[in-house]
Image 1 (tube, one colour):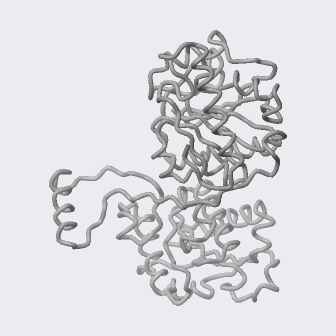
Image 2 (cartoon, one colour; image 1 turned 90 degrees about the vertical axis):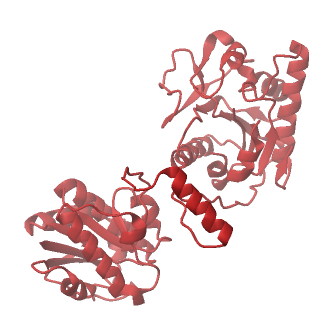
Image 3 (tube, helix red, strand yellow; image 1 turned 180 degrees about the vertical axis):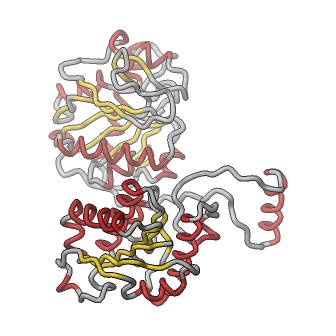
Length: 73
Length: 346
């Protein structure tokens, strides 16, 4: 899905715990998600900490979008 | 066996590119490469008629050419329809694929065509139509026609068609059950031994390769960009309006988040059988981070958050299906003027 969108000219940042799969299929901008069951969250954290984690991951995705290079962050 | 053959203006002897606008014409008997094909066909078989049409005409008037071909095939009471070979010719391949598919569904007779693997007609029609791998050089004409004749005869006689590697056609993407003498373990051990000895061996499943694609660049700054959220984690509104299945999904949905400061537990559910949904169910922002995106929208870190998020179920999905879903999503996002996507995967 990522590569088809990028072929259409839309930059995509993919947040996934399975970065290796994303790299294999050719995703260009990859951000390591927290886990399979909550890629942008963490139930072991306090609500404010979890929110901060999510904000950090989204910021990484935005940074990757702004970058001109292939990235895994 | 009566055969009707389709050719473009070049192979049909009308002329080159300057005759590409020629409308379809029906000629009795074989023409051009059809004469050789007529000799190769099994005894008792013959090409009873040939349709010749200009490449531009066929592409620009697809409904016309399809109706014309369907009518002629019925009049001739054909048992087999052959188009091409088209080699690398893109318009020819697209037209050959279209008329083959139309004849197959309208007259329910076997159809065969031939193209090189790079021909755009292959991507579109390989699933519906048997396409002999012609390579790109017309110098292979005779060999290609032999394979067309063999396949055509088998299909017309309801004989079993072998796998692509032995019959010489382009794989259609189907898995077929067949009986084999050796167990999977034996075949695996043999392959491993061959590999250790440096001998050649054929994997039984084609190895998928992924071509790297250039990194598309942002055309606007992030602070001005409209950004969309997409997920393959199966998040859907309560009651799952598009009936996303929990695996093998052929569908996807677009769901409004307009004016939502964040996603609430009571409004959403998860259609995905590949992971424990409990945590995302409890707080859907853990999968589709609308809460954080809204904050960034307010602070000016991003231009805006797109008014809907797109969702499908990325569980046991065949690659071709996922690609199609990706293409369909891309089209919707482009039409909405989305500048970039954050795609979240489980």
